[in-house]
Length: 101
Image (cartoon, rainbow, N blue to C red; front, side):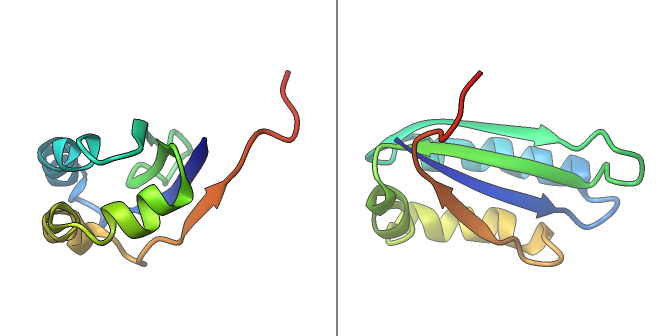
């Protein structure tokens, strides 16, 4: 399992519109091969209410980087969501946990 992680800094004042667009975009990713789950969490720290943490579980790295990113659904995802970010997020991928508790 691969964990994709991204900090999404949404333009201030656009949080509700972003959440509505994300709800529309979610089915585009959830039907992809290798998709397992996703979580979108809002930052609770003062002054960071427009920051979100996106974590997506994939079966393999290629399911995300080649499969989803190469799909027609990804083009729709981009159109729905990418204009909300400033700066554009860095997406990172993580393997199995190194430590668990």
